[in-house]
Image 1: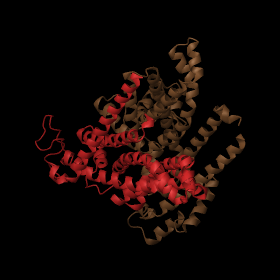
Image 2: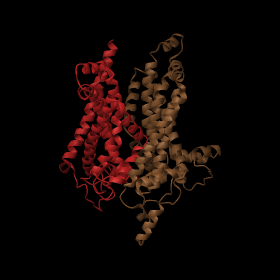
Image 3: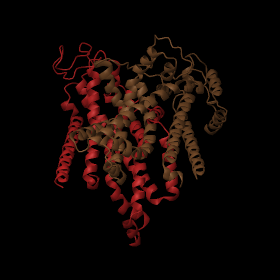
Image 4: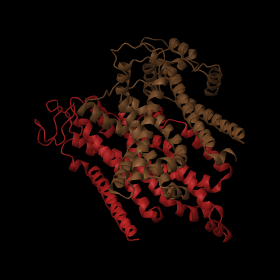
Length: 286
Length: 335
């Protein structure tokens, strides 16, 4: 018995640090993005052919003010990462939220209303699941053209099934419970029951999925920039930096390494935030 | 019962494939920019463009184009690639073996890594090592194949250059192969020198694809092992005096595998979908790399063919896993 409580205490503490680390990194990123003009040491677009491929500050030949080195056009890597955070976070927040809204609504309707609504939505999910998502997003961007709105649209079109699938299953499970029947006996209508009774109980799952989706959105944006379909090539994006870094990896590893680490930490932070919240919401799970 | 289920499943699969075909067909036909204009030299006249547009059937309405395309597909004709002017089917089937080999190698790696993680975690449950495995699992799970691929390029392509990080085989090598399955054919021909070169090229992209799946397998299998370990028959075998290793691998594992299997099916299709960007990352000459080129070149018939092929593979994998599950689960087999 004593072991069990100790175990629980340890688990709780770990969740705490996880949430703090994840939240801390994302806050830092958000601040850097908002105050980019104040924080960034250099102009992210300024090219200087005398300062190309400068190494990061601890290496031989580094130049003061260019902390993480420069790329093959002499642009400052750190400043580009900071400005790139703007696009990444906008995509994460906006695309993540819209996808969440549409996918959850469809999943909730399919799972609770059943009948032909479920039939149509489930068929659509099946069809969507038969598409390779990366190829689908590249195709969509090719069709609707590059740009911020296109990326957001593509993410929404492709990823709504992530929410719809899970929320549908949850809503189905909740719909079979006694409290739902009681609510209907008490005189709530179908839509009322769905929004007032089912939705609050599915909400924790939706929140967790949302944080995961934000991480995924950042990756999708990076993949699209990598394939060179995201934004105009001038604007700094993490994916675009990674593409450049991949091409010159043998000459200047830092051009690849630093955006990659940033992307790693951001994706990890979003998912850890989700995991931490899940544990907070769901004590039974532990 | 079994046959009824099979027929119903094949029915929904057909609906899914038709849905995919319709969506791709409509989506790629709203692509701005005339693909035909791109393939002609700058001096081409209006008449040239019109003639070529008619040749590819692009002057007809979208429903009419779709019907013509379906007619062709039913006769095994997927159209002609606009950029290479070869039959789409030949191009796609030429690249398919490379992608299949990569996916299967990744799947095998994922099962091995995930299986070892789950078994070790179960054996060492309650210790610090279990916690470490869980943390590693969680990290592997939340970072996608694209990032693992880049990390592997840096680690084993640049920092400690032990593996190839570009291409499928060293270009200067003389290849005696008659099929596209280089990995398997080199083994059959006992050309171990070639086999080693091919494996060295495939290892990093396959690992990038395998890591997230390995984490999922590890997590699920461990969870279901944990549940199985509490069942009476496992306790019984323990009282019989069997050691812990025997109990885990011989008694608990066979029953714990089944729930993992269904999820691995869906996850395997995600892995195959991941080949698109991972092949691009490693310049691996498979379907996915060809697909991205096709999109960039606006090669409509080719894009169509590749997407349909991916959809066929996905639905086939799901079908096989469903059937396998029915066959393996005695409760479903007789009921």
